[in-house]
Length: 273
Image 1 (tube, rainbow, N blue to C red):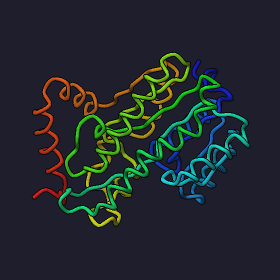
Image 2 (tube, helix red, strand yellow):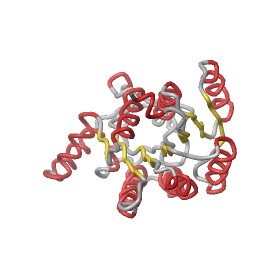
Image 3 (cartoon, rainbow, N blue to C red):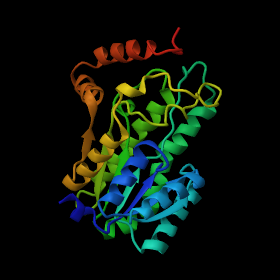
């Protein structure tokens, strides 16, 4: 049934060169969607495009840095030029950070806001006319950090909270239209986002401090995204961390403060003293 739902729908996936974005692009292609791959690494995108086309998928790639408004406009224009329309926009591109606010260079926080928040805003703005015409779907891939402030990830938390506010307001504005807006909140997921996370001075963190084997796999998140789209969910919260955080945020926020602090302070090479 899911294959029929996604058959021939045009879906853009930002940040599709790795992790959740890559898994989602693969699953959409498998379900018969026309997939637009968007990320900064054109060489990697070309490899993925070739692989998917060999499996019979209809795929198109556009090199895109979502922190650039012009790149986001170009992504939408190139997609419409190639596929004539847009049915699904999955705002997945994101970067993280790991540093205390007292130590961090403010350019790091600006970089996270540009990618995680404004990237979503830019892509959604230019895709909106086509999505509204098609009664389409706007998805924002967020994080537990969008539910509650995450110490040591202050810029990441701020950007995801901003995304939540934007997506919620957009959904309410469109109560009387057929545009569907959905937030997806995975728990800790094994992906490249931690290896590409920024530290206090803006340089890359490198190797992840967390044990990836104990995290959700990107394929699990991809399945949840497609299932949520088909069911027209408003919010999809995944994993024990995500559901537990949402519960504690509502009923025991001070307890969540303590849990977040304790959990993140126990990471290898934690920025906490």
